[in-house]
Length: 189
Image (tube, rainbow, N blue to C red; front, side):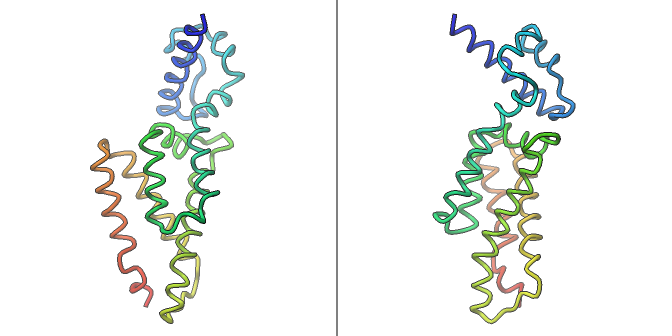
């Protein structure tokens, strides 16, 4: 009997992922999820209190990976390692990552991309600014680090949305990193 319960629960989750990926949290329909999972709507509510509970079940693992990245930031030495960490999350949770980034309006995760951008900005600023100061290069407005991080993160997610294969994804990200960060210090001179 427990096997059937897990099977039904997993079907609901899989159909919810499709629904949230297509329509987002705000426009996602519990009735559509139930119909596509082949269960009665009341049965969905036996497994999940409400739509928010179901959404949280889907995206919480991605959010927890992000929180672990923040906690272990001291161990991350470079911006490239942050990107590698995001790539690892993407390998395991691509759909969930794109849902939390693109389709979480109306949830507690709606600011996830902004949080990720601020994390990247802080990391970039902490690693690049001292290097620039050491070379005698003045940064007139540190907001530029946010602009760089924001633009880079947007490019990263454009790649995640479009690239299907891991090799192609890594290649495109590598090219993006070269474009953004090779000789970045020289562009501040």
